[in-house]
Amino acid sequence: MRTFALKTAVNGVALWLAAIALPDIRLGEQAPELSNRLITIVLVAIVFGVVNAVMKPMLTLFSLPMIVVTLGLFTIVVNAILLAVTAAIAGALGLDFYVDSFFWSAIIGALIISFVSMLLNTLVKDERSRADRAGRGGGVR
Image (cartoon, rainbow, N blue to C red; front, side):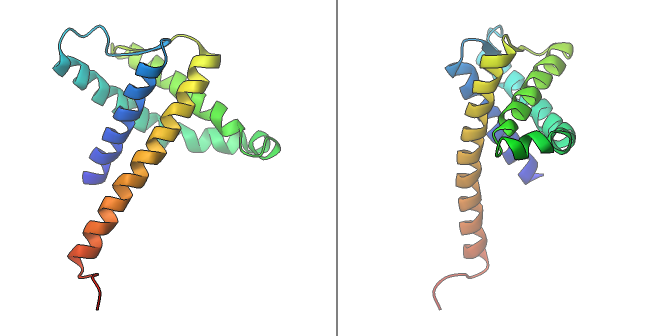
């Protein structure tokens, strides 16, 4: 449960920063209060996590030839597709999350989300490994 909450928080921060950086990505802007915006961000992060868990393996498998030919750069397009699907599902659920333009907004948004998620996951992993070492007596012997 703790891992799910951490991944959702990381996704939420990454989505929020992409929405701040790009004017064509909007996340929770119509909510009048901060608490409503945070709830929207968390719900969109959950949708994004589910979309990534369900669709990313299939999309990666089907696009494997393109990924190999482009030396991995096509994964950016796969991530942009996942971001656009998340926006479509969030819109269907009545959540305030929009990606206006697929090509530039979704691709640059996918890059921002990937970079921020990678950075935050590294920081969270380091904190967890330090806590694990401290809990197991992993000090100097």
